[in-house]
Amino acid sequence: DLGDATSFSVGVAPSHLRPEADDANLGAPQDAEEEIEDPGSLSPKKQTKQDSSGFQVFKRSTAGGRDLSAIFNSQTIALKDLKRKVRALGTTVNDSKKQIEQFSAEITRLKSDQAGAVSAEEQQMAQTIKQQKAAYRSTFAELNSLREEVAPLEANLAQTRQRLVDGFNTWFRDKEGVAPPAVGGAGEED
Image 1 (cartoon, rainbow, N blue to C red):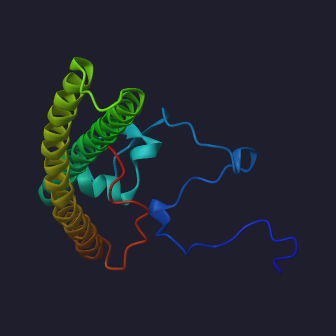
Image 2: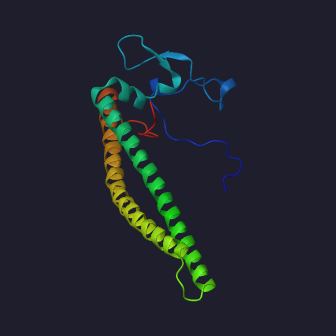
Image 3: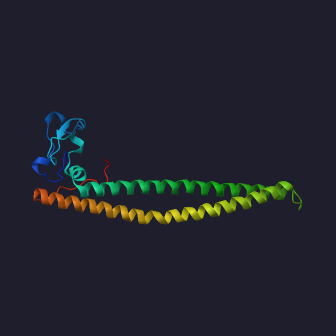
């Protein structure tokens, strides 16, 4: 039971990386448009408070951080695109299967209405079912092929994320001489 606990601690950040506490704005979202100086830059480059975390400084001010961040972002985009294609093909496969089932049900109905004679309409539907099944098989094979590509992309993305976090930890330790604060999300968009 937490009782009437109203806050919790997540650790202590170095003083230059701590947010400015303003009692009037405590708990309120900070204005992301307020400009501050970039602590990782030699020139008084302006940036927003939202971008002032040590991790954001690492991603923008070091060659390794920029490179890994760019790789991470491109891998994220590639994975999202692949998953979008998988969803679209899945929908196409499901729609094809429904059409095949509908035509099969219609042929069954026509056969029961007719006493053994095969009508032109029934032959046309049988031909359509054949074409639908060929398209279904082709699309299903493509879907399975794309699904197999998802896992390796996810693994590469996880590796890049870990390399990005490890690079930040090393950079921060070298710069500050202390262990870095926990990084909330290596994949946060720039």
